[in-house]
Image (cartoon, rainbow, N blue to C red):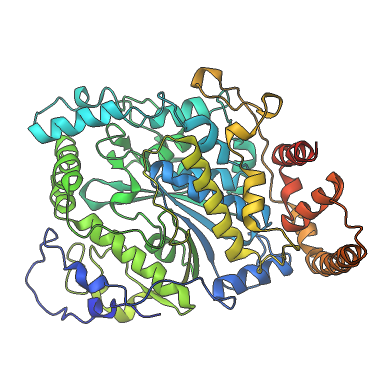
Length: 560
């Protein structure tokens, strides 16, 4: 697969003229010369996943020198697609194969639930859909109107009401008393060996990369002062959890999510941070340069055929520009309104497409504003030497060209659930061979998705289990996470034996059904037989008892 990206690296870097970051390179250099295609079975990322599963490899005990990162794009409610992809990874028993997880915006929430080994899918399908406590479009429209008229506000006065309430997600959904409590115990145990990194965008082009040390650690400096990573006292949200503060810093959408999160770290001065998509919407640069990742599996939330904007529109030139100016982030305002973020995003998409063929991809350093040698982020000239840039294998997982792009503000339940299903199907189809799974006759990944993620109208009241149409009707559901331990290794040790046994069972089952058809005695599968078929297709489904019970009940209901 070829893309016109090499022209970005041929510019002469000897020009001593100071660069102007508001002058965005032409986007025509990113023209895709052929449509993307699924990664081949021999893709290095798939081979590494298969090898690690077969050899019982755990994050703390690897038998290979590679570093595999799971990268999660955000996108508001579009993150439901990533939630579906993440569920396919979990149900195929591939979670332990990754060394680090990097999340951008909504992807950081999904990444956190992945580390704790909890399913966050129903946060999208049940809790956030149609929930005015989370999303108020009129407030977004009000802010857009202010940006159009250029009306000035006091910093906090202008952000009293937010269109996208991230505090609701963190306090009322993820907290210990929330609707879907986050398992901090499992998370704290697992993140020691499988690290989560949360990306955000700071003032003065300082990119925030927050990891386990920032979530929990306290330390004492030479002056004897003890510091703890948490939100500023001036932050109107008043987050009392360092971890939640880091998550919040990744999700403050300019113009919709309220003021930036103000954080301080290790005695440094406080800085303001906002949504990660401003600098790195698809985490690729950060894992390669911060964690020395050699392989990156990138879960993308936009379909293959998504039309990428290549010139600043109303949001870039008015809403976002006005937002950053109100926050005294003038340099970011100029850069964003000139289309800088759009260029960075298209460059990230180009990297993922280029990696589909299985070849190593040249990854620009985080210090480079635009991926071309003559435009650098600051005065550090050595980073423009392409020979010093790193390479990595990049494999994107994305929904097909026939899938319509979801709005980040989507609130229709069927659209969101369909997005979850589409994400699951894309992830399952890409990863099933690496997981040693073969679907039996007549079963498709779409069948599995419908069984796992039903529409509300398809569930009777006795099977609703907390599903509701109004936020006031929602019921708390606690799903305990899992800890990375020897049990996971033991399951992996049985991989080869289980795969061989399942193939024999499928062969016998196919021949038996064929004989019964010839004799005219074919019978429907019993509930137990169908459940066994599901377990062979989703090897780790019983690791999530809450989900397994729901699926089993749906099978029973279908057979009534």
